[in-house]
Length: 136
Figure (tube, rainbow, N blue to C red):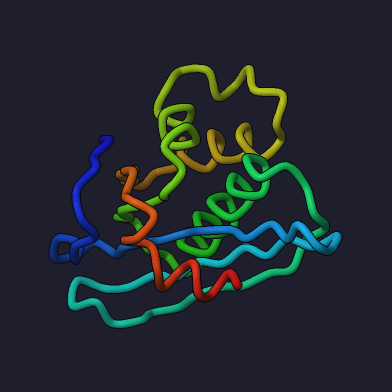
């Protein structure tokens, strides 16, 4: 599912995963972060990581991958994933994941094949402020 809707709370029984990244222009570092919240908007868990600087697209994909891994490890089986990277969302929803040269994209594809429900949608950058703050 792709949507440009405003950030909202997930349905009852679902969790919301927001992911983001920040690639520094002045250093050799990038950071990624994400947050998982319940249907009331309460923080369940989150992550932040420092990585070596890489392409923005690959870093954003890595953030999404780490968020999905965390959701799986925490046993959340109904996940609404929101990302402000429209191109990444479109690529993941296409059938070209297996053929991607990026390991992160192939790993996301593998995770999505597990026994769980994941809805993926695009949100505007200004609706991803909490996750942007975590990544910074």
